[in-house]
Length: 110
Length: 110
Image 1: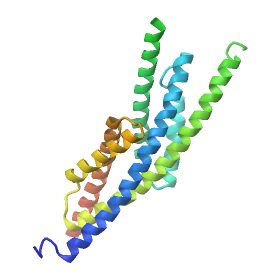
Image 2 (image 1 turned 45 degrees about the vertical axis):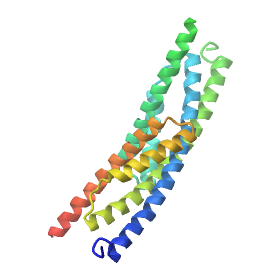
Image 3 (image 1 turned 60 degrees about the vertical axis):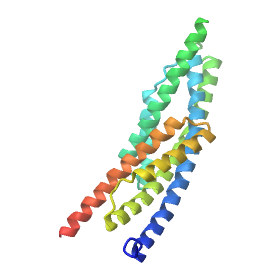
Image 4 (image 1 turned 90 degrees about the vertical axis):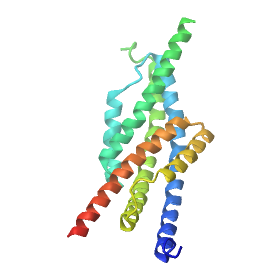
């Protein structure tokens, strides 16, 4: 027992637990912000579908990637990761826009 | 000219631009929070490497996924997306932890 619960091991676990609580707080905040982000991108999707614009916009994505890479560098985050992250979000958004566009076209047929 | 710059098209572009500014603000905030998150996970990685703990922790990940799915539902975000998002972050974190662990072992040999 004293071997598996040494003061060192207890300190380590206390330190890990404290850091993980901070990580969990950040994750909760980020998930709430992403929920807002998808509300905005769904508004974009509806506007684009109503105007017959394509779901994807390569020029907008190019600008977003450059901007997020700059912000990542400023905050000492790997710019490659920031770009991967945006691509991850954009893939989800385009998936939503395609759903909106296809629902729209079914309604147009009805 | 009047056809490509109709009042409707102008309104649409103004609305799109306003929404995109909100999306850009959210993205900047999220990138800054993820920069903090990786500072914390790198601290976790160093603690784990020093204690000889494995980079990956399936039980911790299981708890995180359940918690983030609940938060996603509360904020009307797709829980599937929240889970994919956490997996995306964890993959990056494990990659960092492996780098820390291998750097540690090189130093231990030196």
